[in-house]
Length: 329
Image (cartoon, rainbow, N blue to C red):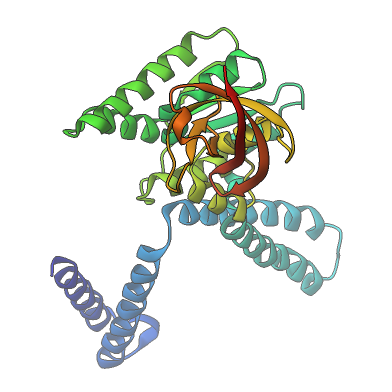
């Protein structure tokens, strides 16, 4: 309601200004009409700008101003080359139209080109450029990133945006005991990473107030820093890849490192519990892979040799099926 009242006041002021101070020697009635039309044009423009992200508004304006500056310089240089007044005037005017237009389009279509981080990287050599990797909340809570970093497989700088740290703190302060435990584990992992000599952890103050969701903020941050995202979130992984951002998925890494088991091979497992089917037992490998063993229900609590019959690849990993025919060990 408040914004409507402000718009009505703006319309009234501009219309009154057109009536009492008519432009271009118009009559008072035509001046008021011109003011009313101009007022509606301003309100229409204001409505359109409210829907535009502030980042695009900023980069578009920066591109426009940069285009005006370049156009003025180019026009001033080439104006003196031509002696004909009309040609010189055209040469002076053309860059002032073309370059601001191109600058505005680049600012809207390629906003990352006008980010301070991009401009800083532009003036740096390849050796001096940093390789940033963004950590999301899920991969920090997961904890395996700390072991991976200590092995030296992760290089460059790990970046934890302030909005990710805030989300982690909210989870750690949750009323739910399970969430609170997960959040505190994440803070411990982050502290471990900061103390590790293998990697450098940086807390970034970069934020995008116009973006509400943390995953969307993370994607925008990755674009502005030219960074990779380290995560184990399936949805974030897919959305980031669709937008051309390189993703390092911890779950995919774990699946790739799981030992290859072929049908017919023999392996030793500990039968932990009963299976769903008759006479089935269930075991788990060290990496968490489930092993379903036929004829092994009676062998619960014992380590046995089994023969692998098949391997099933699922979206969450592998399942191994085997058969027990021998004696316990």
